[in-house]
Length: 244
Image: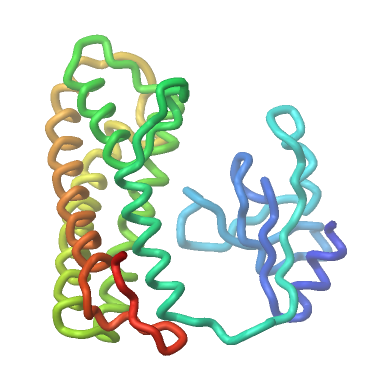
């Protein structure tokens, strides 16, 4: 795997390597150091400063918690990217994630989107809330994703008709509000916040999460209007994107 990833990088393409820098996640490997036998790249919650560095055989050390999945390498390009179709799908998936509801027999960690927020608000509005690993992990991932959504929507908005662009920019504004609230909650709920029960923390955290959930829902409502809007300027392969 190491040699395959190195050849891939030499060909000018990054690779996705499981457990390269973070804990049981797909990380982006974009370089290597032969002398130190290290991979270089990016991983969730590793920051945006210097590239992360870890031994290039670190992927095999994950076996105590999950399989050592290895690497995903990018093959030859088969066709041109249909940007409109990809953007359409990204918005549809964002709405689907937000509105997903947990099935009766699903575990609590299967919560997503708005359901996850509601659970967080209810948890920290009650006494005895315990900040556990799942809280910190999910909080940091969601905060990062919502921040990225702001730039993404503002980047694609000018490509579409006025009504569509308006909804995309409104959604970006709500996501920005959510992201700012999440940043303010980072010391209380983030990965590096103290674990355990802290009633004073809960009193501060519950209203912040409630406001963030409200901003998130408003953003999702804008995206729903975008994907359901007849006549929106989403064109793919010469056909208009229709809601039904």
